[in-house]
Length: 77
Image (cartoon, rainbow, N blue to C red):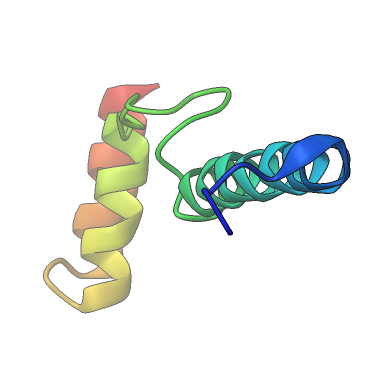
């Protein structure tokens, strides 16, 4: 009668597959987290724009004209 005991054959096959399953699951989660950019070098750090970057962006958007851009650029230098 079957009592739920797998014997040596079940252990020799089952344990490696269980380790492989959990290992692949953990690696998949780590890869997903890295792909989404939640870890790794520079994670959580914000890039601070310099005043010149902000000035250039305003000029490109048309918020300021060339004369004002050049004047403010000289002021920053």
